[in-house]
Image (cartoon, rainbow, N blue to C red; front, side, top):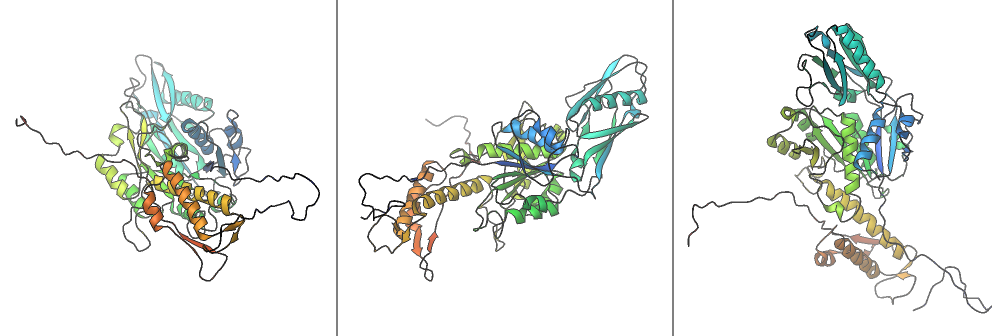
Length: 495
């Protein structure tokens, strides 16, 4: 079999020894970056709509995006859940047409003055603020004390004013997400003698999120396989679906960049079901939650970071995410958590679920995609679970690396041609794919090697002599989701 050379010519007569070294191909190495999409404050130095990498420098996110900004919060939440993850951010400016959400903390309903000094705690967006209450305090003076506490918290995601004991809370950012900032007291039982006397007006009125199209276009061909997107309004989801889509987006045959979008949405079961039923996108996962003290953007960042940590490398990417703790995420009150029936309904409507452990920590229960039906409108569970998408993008990138490394610069001949260095035949490509599939099976990404080999088709295109067509049947490894036990109870086993 003739040996081909890249640089040593056949017309060399000068003695003696010449060597050229080329790459024999390296094992596939999956480097999967996490992208956080969110709003910055005007005080942040980062340019809007331009992706920026988050370095390990302490609190660099506050310099880039502004202390108390949405994106600063998201970076912190992501770091808690995947400390070594390569994190990038896509900062957005508030929409000029947007409206900031507002709410109220009414201290005017307190029984004042108190007869014994005590304290009072309120939680705003999951952040705790406690003031002392003396026997001479009025609602107005208590309001002033709270303003002092708020001002001392440079990472607060809101501003506040005090009008005779009525605190008006305003989200720092314009847009719908400010409506998810939770207002409450007594997060952990009765925390004060005045517990239950404060009246809260929930955050509302936030409207008009930033437009994503320019920012997404600025990502170019940069690979971000895990994207945290906190915006679940129809316009934002449509922009993300077009960005990721199979036809012309990141999953298209011409792009082959791949990736997955992860979001959280705060709403009632009925409204979450409506949201999920209006979507059918295998590249989008939304987890539903109701009345969590933690803002929705922190939920989004934590979910995406945890997914990136566990779905980036084999064989871990084939395991379910159930019972993985979301660090830094606060659970809703017991009465606000979804029931088993609620969660089963949501999982059929394309919305993922969480669970709460006995210690109160929040855990992923099942992260699914919004995909429910195929192009014919028939119910289809192929892309129900996020693991299938993680396995698919991993397998395709793995096989692409293997094929390109082996056949990237070769001549093409029929199977009847003799084996030669620098010449590829359809059966050579077939053997490369079979070997790659076997390696993926060894990594527990795929299974059923023998059936794969029987159904794999590799052939020359009928009209283009320079093209090979491949029909690649893939059987991905599944996850253990449910154990159903039928017990048979007896008062006494027969002898």
